[in-house]
Picture 1 (tube, rainbow, N blue to C red):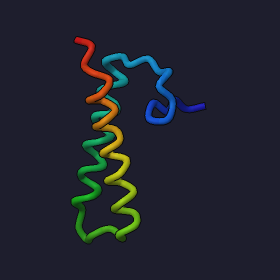
Picture 2: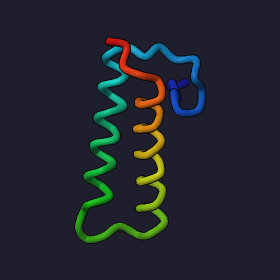
Picture 3: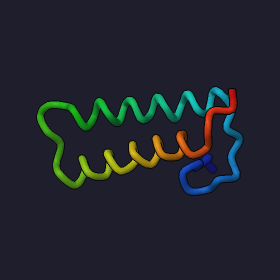
Picture 4: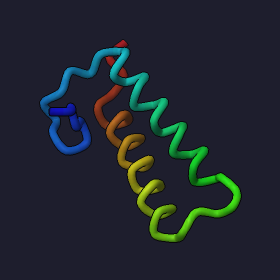
Length: 64
């Protein structure tokens, strides 16, 4: 079973995990800016996931 930190807060937020989530948010940014423009529903889904990741990383705080 894959870890789903956005759905379950019982997750180890190691530096590697935080970096992986931040990298995913970056990839989602690139996808939402891609040309040709993505279909509206897919674009909205990707933007929503990116925003959830950023909110999660912000609200969980930086442990360093």
